[in-house]
Amino acid sequence: MSLLKVVDLHTSYGKIKALRGISLEVNEGEIISLIGSNGAGKSTLLGSITGIVSPASGKVLFEGKDITNNRPNEIVRKGISISLEGRGILPRLTVEENLRVGAYSISNKNEIKAAMEEMYQMFPRLAQRKKQLAGTMSGGEQQMLAIARALMSKPKLLLLDEPSLGLAPNLVKQIFQMIKDINQKGISILLIEQNATMALRIANRAYVLENGIVKLSGTTEHLLNHSGVKKAYLGEVR
Amino acid sequence: MILQQAFNGLALGMAYALIAVGYSLVFGILRLVNFSHGSVYAFGAHMVILFVSYHFGLAPAIILGVVLTGLLGILIDKMALSPLRKKNSPGISSLITTIGISYIIQNLLMMAFGSEKKTFPELFPSKMITIAGAQVSSMQIVMFIASVILLLVLTLLVKFTKIGLAMRSVEQSEKIASLMGINTNFIIAFTFFLGGASAAIASILISGYYQIVYPTMGFVVGLKAFAAAVLGGIGLFHGSIVGGLVIGVAEAIAASLFGSAYRDSVAFIILILVLVIRPAGLFGKKGIEKV
Ligand SMILES: Nc1ncnc2c1ncn2[C@@H]1O[C@H](COP(=O)(O)OP(=O)(O)OP(=O)(O)O)[C@@H](O)[C@H]1O
Ligand SMILES: [Mg+2]
Image (cartoon, rainbow over all chains, first blue to last red; front, side):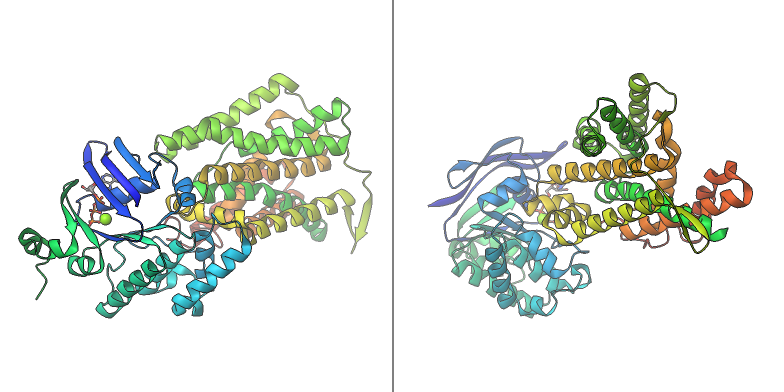
């Protein structure tokens, strides 16, 4: 069943047309990757889904309901959560406070506590650093915090904007393993990645964005073997 | 003599701190110096004399005055500042707007109450107490203790409650806060309410001490409290408290040494000296201003 459906979405920043008619779909349980070069409009798409930027036209449907132009804080409550590009942790809050902010939409204290324990189990690094100011953590730790924080709201759909950006190769592998684990727990994932090879390997399906439109889409086997994709995005494959 | 003035200064300084915290609260969350704060302060005391004149009794009048002044804070944000934010206007437009609002409130108070000085009721029958040879009125002690308690409550609220966590999140990034499910408009409104309400309480305490109110009463006090906030490092609670105390005590001592005609300039002389040495204020750190 379709969890998220984006229909002919147009988004502009003033005169710059960042999205020029994007349609895509995330089904329940899927990992969907979104690849595309810098400035293709990937982050803008996530911004339009989460209510940070308002689309000029088109629709965003979540579980069949129209959520276009809902406010970001309402969208979280409906079950969409994001880990931002560049992590977007709150630097002057502690690790634990960042997680609490992530659970802001949940009112049951026991539920928050349980979620927090789960995150500390999943990311032992964070457990050791509960009281540390988030801004003083390493890049990799901040990335884990960003993902953990996004999970604190118990999302049905997790949006990940370049979670492997700037991380060492072994950490990248670890992050991708975590994405799989999270998906195993029943959370659907829309993943933006520069690392196209890994993004295609982990996903069920993928979309290729170029200049604000969907250039290509399909199953990952199909895209991995597509000559255009190979040339433009998988150049680094040896 | 010095001890006497120190006591006077501590009481008044704590009340300044309470006003200064209002500047810090709003500055923290919006990076905006809210120059209407002094007039909001004056509004608080006037509401109390209004309700007292309608025989509400002092305690209900105080509660109503505090709540209404908090609501005035929200109204200022919703009517004038929030529309500017939605249009992404430059910060300077908001700043000018708060100065404009300050005069509008002052003029409305003049129209409603007249511009002459009016007496403010005594909060309770005050006695003089002698501590180590210095004379302290019980009103001064109450002013000091009430301000300390309120500042403590505000600090605990910001540090340890869910809404405080939301305030600190909005302060660091409104965008991220909203993505985490925080209704940022509500948090900003709540912050303005706290600022207004704490100004009203300070206003009631100080008016209860001097027993005089008039529409422009917030002008100099507002500037001094602003100086206190900047002195400590604006946006920082403990900075506001120390700033308020420094200015309160310095002003009282200067008044006794050089005559009270000179007391108002002392706050600013200290402010300028501190800023020359430490541009970010006593406790302010550079570079953490905006994320
Ligand atoms: N706040 C903004 N104001 C103006 N233009 C913007 C803004 N954000 C993005 N853009 C423009 O919109 C286009 C799409 O940007 P977007 O950030 O969505 O790309 P992206 O695919 O995420 O790129 P990257 O891989 O570099 O993160 C770019 O041309 C960018 O310059
Ligand atoms: Mg991007």
